[in-house]
Length: 200
Image 1 (cartoon, rainbow, N blue to C red):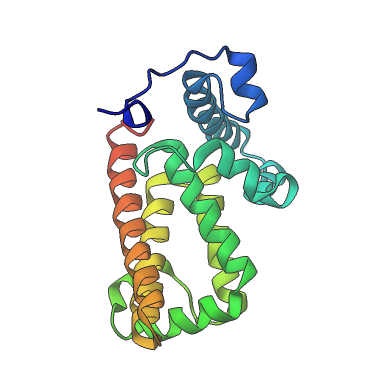
Image 2 (image 1 turned 180 degrees about the vertical axis):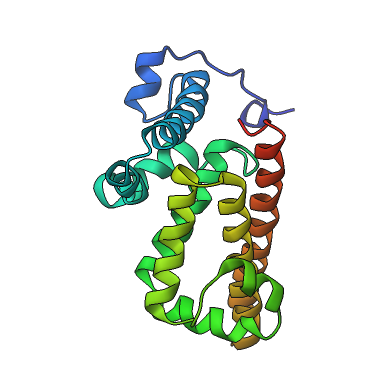
């Protein structure tokens, strides 16, 4: 083996040097932060039983930005409390950013998956209605049955996925429809875990 191709031993860098490079120095602390913030958020909302608190929690992305939640929760497993919350807030943000597109895809998907349409509860499937339902789903996390909120979000994703696949003009939209189906499966699994007191 030549000198230029010889494997090099990993070098040790102290935490300060890693932070200077932008590398997180404590992945365990990040893991705890993700799960603790998710648990505190849900517990605070469910304990308060105050519509004003619920409204602030539903709209928390408007205050702190989606990037902050992504930093906290997006790397956690989909079938965990922070993973579920990340997907619910991401869904709300997407619908809020593109209500016309969400409504168009939802309306296209209704005829393929009527039972999921009944669970999601978007009626009629217009831009204002999809935004209202996205907010209602998150509101259910804090002042309703969390498992039902997750199932409702899953049903919403399945209707949109069917509609997106139907109106797709290329493979990119089909890939995104598949991702929505995966999200629906994860949210449904999270609902089962919540009912079994196993969503952490």
